[in-house]
Length: 238
Length: 238
DNA sequence: AAACCCTACTTGTATATACAAGTTAATTAC
DNA sequence: GTAATTAACTTGTATATACAAGTAGGGTTT
Image: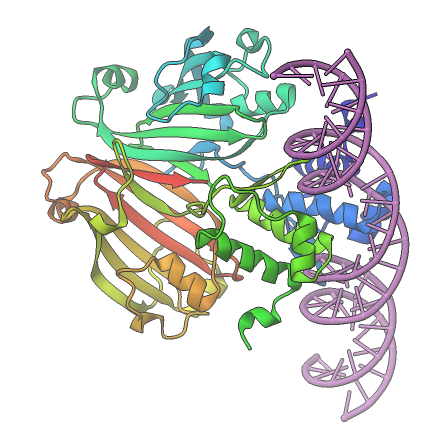
């Protein structure tokens, strides 16, 4: 008996449709089955279907048009997720490599990129790690991540260079990013960044300090990113 | 007879509650009246109230807690809105001055910061303007905005140095930002930016190319911002 | 072939009702 | 005074039903 069997009906339908869109059962531009059809298929009432569709719409999977239907938009990037885009095209996954500079380890909290910590967070302990991303073997992005050592048993033993942090959190811990805040600056590379990015002094580097809010109470993800955007801009949706 | 009289019930209730929160009738940490109380007050049913509250929750005005109530979070920054934050505190409005470099004028579309334009957008014509923002009399942010010359009659005659572009769009044209995408880079100041920000060559400058989606079909706001973040980071939520 | 009309579909809005699950405050027992 | 229990509140989930408003497609008329 899977976890889905314990979900409220509207969440179960939402997850099924979301999965279908992610897996390409429905493609961008397609119309989902109508609310009446879904109601019959999933053996729930139309208001329950509408609640599921509303979630999909809010997250960017579909757009609803009165009188026409629910139009599939494809899989949205996901709120808060950043990617690298070239000056003309996006970077394919196959050209992106992740190196762990510091593997995930449990530490006590340090200063979190000038965001305040609550008492609850301070009590939880912290998972800390550093990553360097390379495009075509060229380092372009360095980031430090801290998040509470809570809700995420055995996180440090997972291998996730090839997987998105967010995918792992969602799949294994049912943790999803719901929003966040960020501070963005342009700085010049200090010695550490100069060595990471192989650039000279005075080279401009993008810095983002971010605090991501999730669906779990008191579980915020703090990260600080540095990006050499000479060849690839940082791209995000919101 | 105000426009609110022609809104669906749930939107009317949503607008009233949102206004109450913005105006401080409810403060951060307060509980809103219960769903049953609101149902009686506004003479609609509880599902209609719940639909209004769900919108407020989605936009960050409230957080709902089962068994407890709807907790006011205050007025969220608004999706897509950026502000300047000092290294230690946010910039008060009184220290921020806006200068129009180019007043809003109707032009034909130019290239919009490497975002593609649809045929519909091309047909609409474009409103274009440039602004420079100063903090404590120091220029820190320069931005170029283009949006369709549609839905916004007599926009160019409005004075909005002291008002937020988004506030004007919302109040006078019922246009709201719903989300968007952005490309972020760190560059060095070219001659134009050097003169705007009074900085030397090689000074790092933040650049953001943004495309904001609104509630109006085919109405996207394109903007390109340059920011000297030496003293003030750019701050946003999402 | 094009325009118009009508029907059947779609989503949008709303009411009514019921029960589940969480929180808080009042009451009772010790 | 404290702890436990209970009642009354809250939001969460769901069904059922009805009508409004928008879109698409087929048929008819010109």
